[in-house]
Image (cartoon, rainbow, N blue to C red; front, top):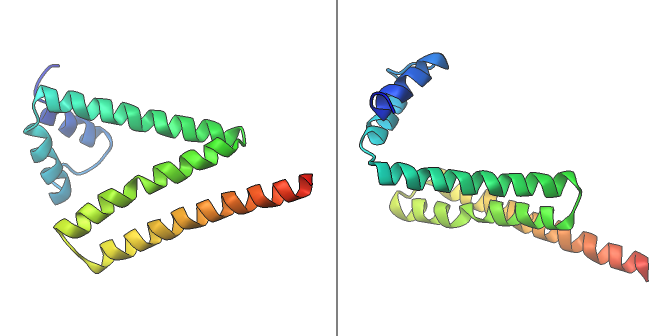
Length: 125
C-alpha cells in the first residue's frame, strides 16, 4: 500500500464527504493507525467471515428456506455475548436496554419459527 493506512482512510473519509476532523472519526483513525499488518489481516478475515454469514442468511431468506431463518437467529444471537461484555466493561442503562431488546428479538424469532413448524406439521396430519 502507498502511504499509511490512516492517510488512506482519511482520503476515503473526505471522498465520502465525511469530516475527518470529527472527534469520533479522529479516535477511529488514531486506533487504526496503531494496527500492525497481522491485526489488519485478522480484521480482514473476520470481515470476510461476517460477510459470508450475511450472504448465507440473505440467500436462505431469499429462497424462503427454514435454515435461512435459523441463520438469522444465530447471527442476531451472536451479538448477545458482545453486549454482555460491553455491559460488564462499561455498564449503562442504554446498553442493558439494547441487550434486553436483542434478547427479545432472538426469543421472538425462535418462537415464530417453532410456532410455524408446529402449525405446518398440524396441517399435514
